[in-house]
Length: 564
Ligand SMILES: Cc1cc2nc3c(=O)[nH]c(=O)nc-3n(C[C@H](O)[C@H](O)[C@H](O)COP(=O)(O)OP(=O)(O)OC[C@H]3O[C@@H](n4cnc5c(N)ncnc54)[C@H](O)[C@@H]3O)c2cc1C
Image (cartoon, rainbow, N blue to C red):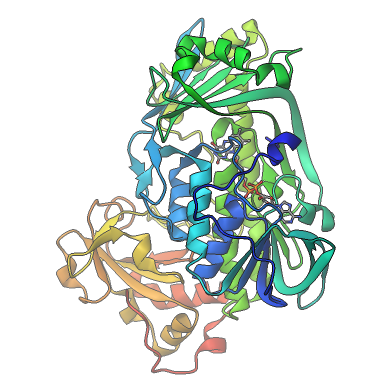
């Protein structure tokens, strides 16, 4: 949903440690200029910083946006935040055990089981967006090669063959020019960057307005997410950290923003959940939702991420999550191109990989919207009744309840070697993540041992021993690391260094056969897989795909491969 003008001004610093505006000392050249320090721009800046890229990130606002927006994140989003250096406990979350869909006539007609974890993270959590943004901003302070400049707007840019030269408006008639090798537009739904590169924002704007209310100290809190799918007043309601609860009330025809945001109206709306005098009404805002996607996610050296590239109705809780997927997909490709580890053509796969999934997610959110806000009583009875009936069929029940209905994050085309093997790994999809234990007894999540580069993972096998010197050198030059994962208690078959036990059986034998190997990208997507004895071929084919074929990069047969 796009914020209203009034909400745009509703900004305040979160905590005393938010970043200070930087006006003086702006650089004249950087690797990447990030426009917009919302949550997605902050995630992009953190990821680029981790990959050693020199970043200037600007935002026209001086403080974090405080109006109620994202509240839910899934396991994929949490995993990407982990990649950006944000770990469990760095910001408060509440794990959601289930999502209920309720009809006033039929009762519960649908449910999603979100209890437990997937790939090392809870399947669904709620959180407080300003706190996550503060956390991401604080992390940026730890990098010397990242400069944050607040209160500065992008005014325009010229895109050339070698760089993008941007003009920054510093206020009071002052301007500054900066040349960047790449520009990332993370400037939200009304993106100037998108307009300047002449891309359409195709899709639909809905006619319904929604009042969002965040309250604290609610007398009878819930521990889950529920959608009250009453066609007269659809109302999603959920728990959130800090003793918070959120309600979203769809406005009826004729109801105005002013009326709905009034204390009297909010008191009436919240009456079924308790006396408003006992609650603290923290935030309220009226939004309208949209389903739009930019006609491309990049043009030349300019890339769009987050709401600048796509906006979705909030029913699937996927707006920010999609922006984080953009960040994970794009940042390593930019870094690898800047560091000369890959051919610039690789950057074209950002649009190819991300846009179809974004569209599928928007379609899913619109499907959820149809369940949440049926047009009238008859439609409500038909679609809610149909969904309730399908629950009698075990496969259908599992499809909905175990979230199989949610589009998989798997590429149809992109930067992976096509084809299938008999392993349960999918090329062009994310590698599973689980807890592993190292030789010294250290336990951690498996992504944390893969490093920030390419990884060759040998399952029950030291795949690094199979590489010839030339391939090993090329792989190391491309930032490759070799990791071995063994059954719990079976590490003795492997070299001590770089071997890890699969503590929860996430990889072996659930996903991967013993003696298998996979090449994994920095964003944890699988490029290639096959028997570990073919690791040499797997690595060579993966490097060729990245535009760094073995002969082009291998200089030293002595080059040592890092083992983690
Ligand atoms: C009611 C509601 C509920 C939602 N619930 C969820 C949810 O549960 N889960 C979920 O994943 N998503 C949810 N979303 C979506 C989520 O909030 C957004 O997708 C996310 O905040 C977008 O982040 P962003 O960084 O892309 O854009 P923004 O947060 O909009 O940031 C853009 C930044 O760019 C800056 N900027 C703009 N123009 C310029 C310029 N010319 N120069 C410099 N700076 C500029 C702005 O000041 C701003 O700080 C929800 C949204 C709403 C409204």
